[in-house]
Length: 337
Image 1 (cartoon, one colour):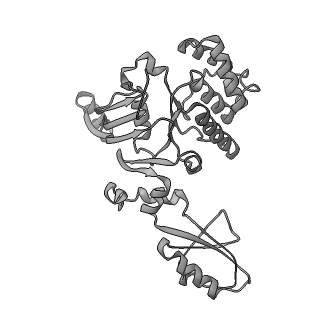
Image 2: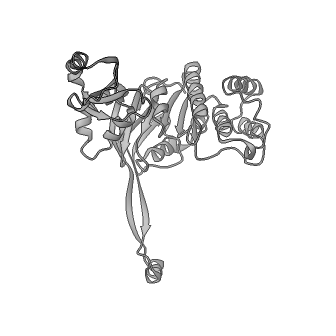
Image 3: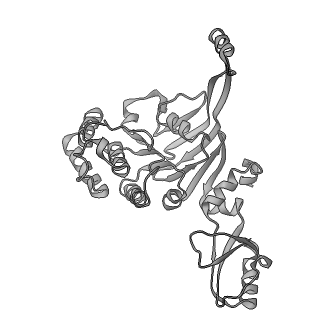
């Protein structure tokens, strides 16, 4: 099925769970046996967005925000309580074979590989499930081997692989059928820095080569800044923001960081110029936070008043920006205003 326009379109998508609850103690346990009390939990509520072909979009939010629930609905694992979704022209939870052959869901905390056999055997099982012709399977596996360096690890039992090696194989298993849409839920969780960097580089290159559309959740902001120009923020099941990373910083955190290295060892009170902030990544400079509109004037004052050896002006860390997006004083209205 050919798809034009948006690849993913969801409108007022909602998912509500009924969760049993009771007081502690034996008496409450006996009473709950005859009559249970339930509480509605709105995991996702009236979320709408669209994603175009080839986009790599970050899907962000704190724990319990509704990110994984949304991905499970889009991949067909869950039925929504209300609303609609179309991915590649399909309704995901109808689980049509053509749709299942066109998408993949990779979850960093869940394994699709059999624990006691080599990943290569799981790959062959996927080939059979997706009915991938031998020539296409070999070509795809060779391409994935080139990008992920699979040859040294695919013949080992999965239980003997490191977490980084296992995630390589998880990604490969999810991509053998050349999906057009990738739903990635924390694909770098628990990986060391080197493995995270390699995984990001792989996803960038895979997107460039295949044109696949990627919706990515991650708690590592380095994943988002490296891969995504656009982010969607969800909090307590509600859409908080949908737009560019740069625009997000401008709307939520309209300030800059000025880093200063002074040419002498004297004590200087930088608080008269801005709010001093700590920066663990650069202990050679002192940093102050200043309103974006005042950067030019404050920089001129610093250069005139102090023996400045080096000075830099940067945007705030994206982690700080996202944290402010989740602050109770922020809302959809003032984020979009």
